[in-house]
Image 1 (tube, rainbow, N blue to C red):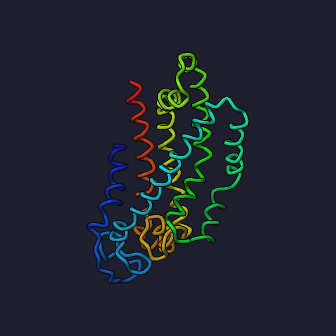
Image 2: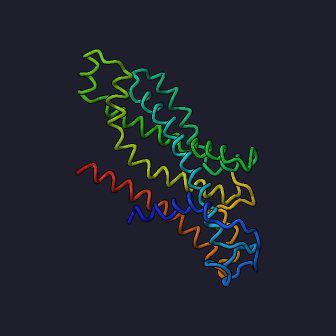
Image 3: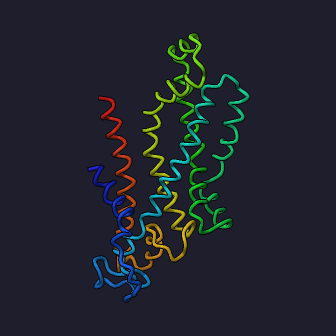
Amino acid sequence: MPGILVAVPVLLALAGPLFASADTAKAVPFSLGSGWFGTDFVGRDVWNEVLLGGRSLILVAAAATACTYLVAVPLGLVAGMTRSRVLDELLMRPLDLLLAVPSMVLLLLLVSIAPHSPWLLVAVVALINLPDVVRISRAAALALSARPAVEAMRLQGESRIRIGLGYVARSMRRTLAADLGIRFTGATYLVASASFLGVGISPQASDWAAMVDRNRGGLFVQPWAVAVPAVLIVMLAIGVNLTFDRLLRTETR
């Protein structure tokens, strides 16, 4: 079941543009009699927009999540393994300040800088998630670095890099895997919220979250234009979390 929940939106997002029609002809707005799911607020075929609209959402969320972990895990590892309180403070205190800034404020700042830049959206979403992942990585590294095995490796003359990458980082993988599903879901909702606000995408671009926003005025006239993209976003979020939960249970056995 989790695999189906993930596969449907991902396949639609990645392969959908290959099967989408290039025909830009428009019909009657909010019509139920045209196409599988009717038309949207300007008369475009809803199914065609669904085929075109998932790639930006999923790719931006995946890129933002990957960037978050590529930066956060090394920072957390260094902060958790260092014996220098000064270095620990230098790494963690700026992140604590960043936690105090609401995520929506950063997204709205993005509007004023570059309203239609997906790469800047990736950077902002990664920055929003960075403090939490660094704190989780640091907490895991602190607990692992206090184990007798780490002290034994130090007494044997192993370098900090070898201890950090060879033992601590490998032992952190379950904690990070448990967080990854939640983090990707959070990134997906942040990207969807940005698209809902018109941030990071062109006003004319096809996007599942933007479809929900643009068509909500006709929800009671033509519900498919809102329901189909909304259900796909929810399926992706739930499916990713269930998939990681299953993987963790399988590894435990």
